[in-house]
Length: 149
Image (cartoon, rainbow, N blue to C red):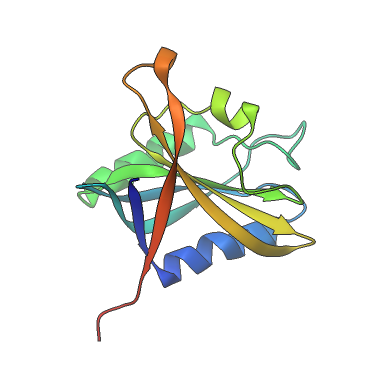
């Protein structure tokens, strides 16, 4: 199983984002570097949810915002390691829509369940596969790293 490594600060920030946008889904990108067995995440970038039809159970990041995030990542010597979003009053498991709209092979997709406005469970999934036709979500472990003293 691959691992998504991130600081407690980043982990708490993406969970807090879900609480702040409740009862709508939050979304954002994770920036970092690939490493053997997964990703080392060094930043989480909040994004606006452009879904106006069903923001309570769907999310979309505007293409122009995604390009801006990717350019900023490159400027910092980083890559888009993945994406995060919340599931208001729904389990932290990917949905058929999440799967259909996931296209960044090799990236992590982090989902936080926000129950009655409080972040509960956070899970990560790696979008594995070589092509769009054989893509699949694989469970990914989350390693929360404490800052070095």
